[in-house]
Image (cartoon, rainbow, N blue to C red; front, side, top):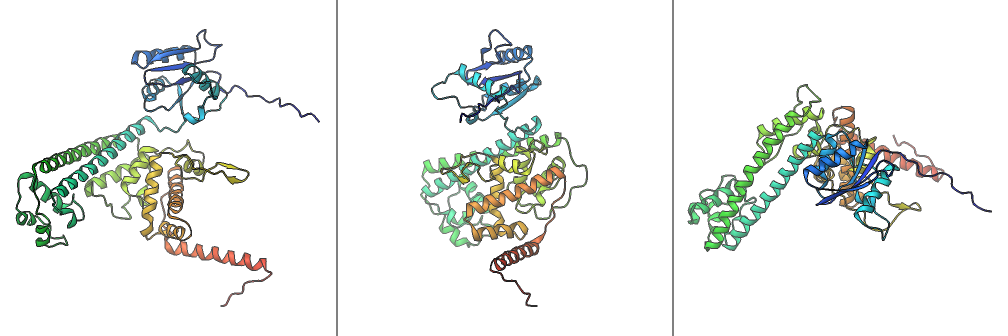
Length: 445
């Protein structure tokens, strides 16, 4: 018997749209051939051509634009089109792959336009413009912190080459004792006994042991490397302070969702890179912007909350449910399934800074005396570490979504509540097993 032909065809969803193939030197733009005699045009990346591109799209009454997220080349054009009021969708390049053997800039932009016109492309999540400014500053600060850590490695290398075994007697070279000795060495002091007198009283190693570790060869080239590494370290500290000041100014400009008094932190704010006063001020600013106190959630520190506020912002209306939110964070189970079974192969690697921050917070939940900490330790007992960390990060993401969307504060249930749930779950499992064998459980009491 002949099969019935499929009469349902793709329908035009966005009749007034455009597709743009982003490049470092030029952008190729395609629109509906019925709207213009020259539907495909090329514009350079100079600012005047970007404005000409926006004028051309406005003259055609284009409402939606789709472009690939290629490096950082799309950002200037995105800002120009967004300022004109156009809805710009940043799409993943994997969703716009061209048919094999048909690859060119002209065909790419036409293919993007065609997919967008049928509604087959979805735009990536991008927070508001002010939140994007905060995001750039927080990412810049993270880069400076990484560069600062490299400076510490360079100082350790120079000391090791001079056979100064300071790192064997101090746990942290950037601590009070380590930095005092390094600065004195750079200033010209070479006597180990004089250098050992800079030892802080809290150091476990005694003064004689510290002095033994400070006998070195003091070669000029290694001293020069140590001097430059220390200067670079001080420069990065100043750069981080400037980033903190800029972040504070941006947080003050963001609309406040809560005007009430900031609740007292349920756990001490511990951050070596910030003073207690700076942490308190940052805590107040984050509470005002987010409307809830995310720091009250166990294992979420002030730096983690700052990353979440900068990467996501307080508005989560773009995500219909917590499942969509966790999927965007790359914390949800993969959906590469066929025939009811996961397909073999590695899952695509997704770089999501907010998801990474939650994973790091989940890794610290092992020693947390809380409901989340007990849940994480139970997961570690039945699955490998990576899966347990991802599952706990998923739990934290659901909590954050509920707090930001509903505006409810976090309520700690405690380890006792987790144990009660675990025992009730075990009891239900035993009852199911007993019923399977036609038995019944009897309370011994």
